Length: 554
Image 1: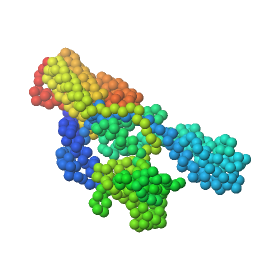
Image 2: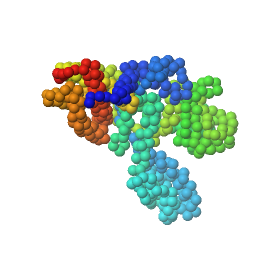
Image 3: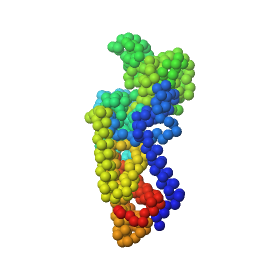
Image 4: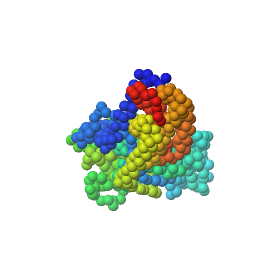
């Protein structure tokens, strides 16, 4: 019989009410967005500014605050295609290997004679041996520093390829190690870029590896491609170096093992530093905006156990000396070591603002990019163009909805009104589910919603046609409606399963825009089945219970 138990009625109306409440923040998009941004910014900084408090008050805290994120084509933003210079990592590996190689070969000086590093390609290390007849011994010693390649494809292979050319020992990365290094470099670059972009609160960025050495970066809501480049392109190479001297001559000649770097805040001041850092940013575990003892913005930091030990040992042995904090070849601060600093924590002071200290903390916390990047393609999509896309999508959705409603009402009368109500609720539920998921809506996603509006009534059409057949067979109204829903169920399930399979294929094999279409289509399938089978049935049952019709013209 055409009957719905009380608990099912409560569940159906409850789900509809929950969907409406969850989708409601999208009607107040800008206010909710500012509210969410203020909460995230305050949590990251550890304190709340008056402006953030005002933004947080724009939306009640007890209300749902999830919204559908707008993609690059709707919100505007920046698009970059970057090429990672993986060869930079080879040079860094060779430079880091030289001190260890020099120490190992020096221990056998009696057999191989003197050694010195010769000019070479950045990707290799060339060492001249005083006694060419002992080259085999030198190759053996150098080979002892090779380790196994850490990768699935390089199992059993060594990371160094060592050869002899006359009286020169040549050290390069092996082919297997180069492949593993390239992969690690790309993965590290992807992670660092993702962390830097996430730190500034952008929503749903697209950061993907393309090919062997390229990265696609799309960030909705950011001002321009230049702004995005400045955020991700900064290498943030932090070092802590001993200070030898301080002066005003940028052309002064530095001794071997020293370098002259400018001060970031003190115009015209240059520091002479020892070029070997005591600790580096790679040993940094945390950095956050803070305030110094005078209440001025600063950045606090903390080292890992290795860095903490080296930092503590150096400060204990050099009390009273200047200690430079260098970021990207500029001295941002050169405090005096007043006492031993154990524990591996400290603070960077300088001419900071709250904004600049927060930005520096972001860069330090995200780490240093392992290699430089060349930007092959950059594009800025203005918010005006994104708004035009939103307006076009809204207009197409309205036209599609009006056309569907008009057709259903013209074809099925009052039952067409019930189906139209179900379609509108279906759209609300799609937005609610996407808001809970934090999904991103793009132009293809809007196309998926419009398609869902058009196809959501298919289930109702099948049901209504089955009811018509039952009425023609002479069944009473209640029996015809009940049998119409029962008989149509298998056809509805089959049709939606096949569409779901197509959506799954598009999601797993498609690119970003295709995936966006597949996500909205899949969500629409689930919600349309719910609204067509359960909500429409509920509306019809209520009407039947109220009017108790003896006959039905459909």
